[in-house]
Image (cartoon, rainbow, N blue to C red):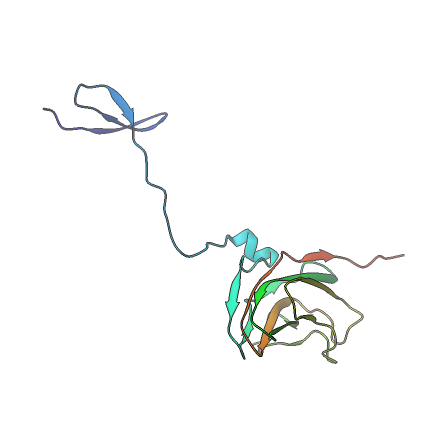
Length: 162
C-alpha cells in the first residue's frame, strides 16, 4: 500500500488514492452555534437576526456610522411574554466623543414601542433635537416580561434640497 500524497493543482488540492487515481480533497465547512455578522452587515446596522431579552433588560447595540440625513428603523417583535413591552430608541454621538452618546430626540418621544408580536417602524432625522450625529446606535428596553425580537437593516436617505 502506498501513502496518499497531497499536491497543489490548478483546480485545487488533490489526493492520490491507493491505486494512484486522483480525487478531490474536500474541506469540512466551519460550523458554529454562534451567528456570524459580516463587516458589511455591521456597517449597515444589521446587528443580529433574533435576540432574547429578559424582563427589565436595557441593552445598547454597537455603534455604526450614519449614512444619511434620515434613519428609518424597523423592529420585528417575534414573541413576547404576557404584558411585555419593547422600546427602541436611537442614541447618537460624534466619532471623537468618548461618552455613551445622547438620545437623538431630546424629548424622548420618537421611539419604537411594541406590545404585541408585530413590526414597528419609526423615522429619526434632522428635525429632532439634537438630530443624528456621526455615529448611531440603538437602545433596547424591556418591561414586565421577556421578548424575542430582531432589528431589520435600517433605511438611510438624505433630505431633499430645493
